Image (cartoon, rainbow, N blue to C red; front, side, top):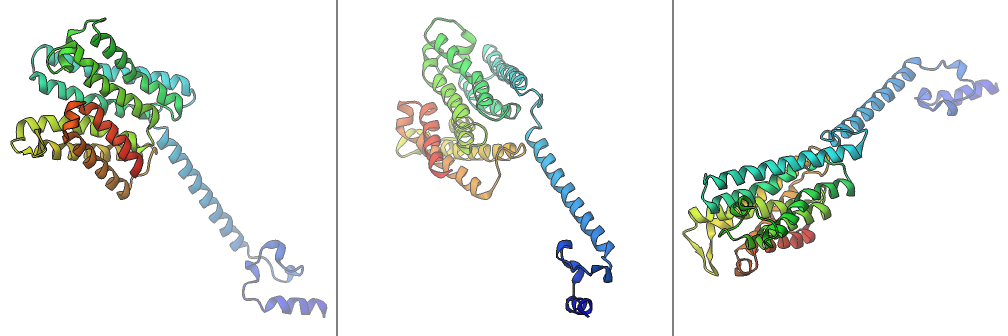
Length: 308
């Protein structure tokens, strides 16, 4: 009778086999376990485990896609530094050749250097590992150019091709102003806002793509000048905001491919705000007096620190 009462008590349940094994009655031999249910449970768990393993592997593959030697991060960073330095050096050498043979006028050639160097340099960032070592080794590339600007600008070292491709009037002392501020800003963005921060992306994009295109467009289409600065035009200011914004969003998508950041519409709007403020700062007379290679990245750093 005790056994029967025990069975009747559990027979009132509609799902006796859904109970965990340890919670089932001791007289479970009267109700044979559902083998099909157990097998299905194992299959479901196996499938979920396989999916989670695939997701983890895909994330690791995505983040490490550009790292050349994942088993030796130090050697991989050294190789990345050599490759990135070669790419940056080849880009700079190209514009020095065009300046030497007068392919473009000097102002256009200088702005092409201005626009391309930082943008090409950021393309190489995924080659490096995450962390301070990757950031410091990557910063050596613009850091070397800081030394070059100081040596050439002070007259210690002579390099006519560099002076011709980077200066406004062919004076080597100009390299101690705009070109020096340019490489200092990129080096600072690389070290402090390495890869996962939208602040560094916005600063370099507005400095290189934005400011570079502003001058190119402004000289050709800038008939209507700004009322508060007759050296700047509506066309140049609008083109700077547009180019800086487009470059920022493009690099947001680019770095998201490697898992360094997540793309979102909220981030897009913040990039737009930083680009607009940076273009307005560039249009002010103070940018002409100091140097827009200094005021534009400073504005991007400060505004980016507030909105990101």
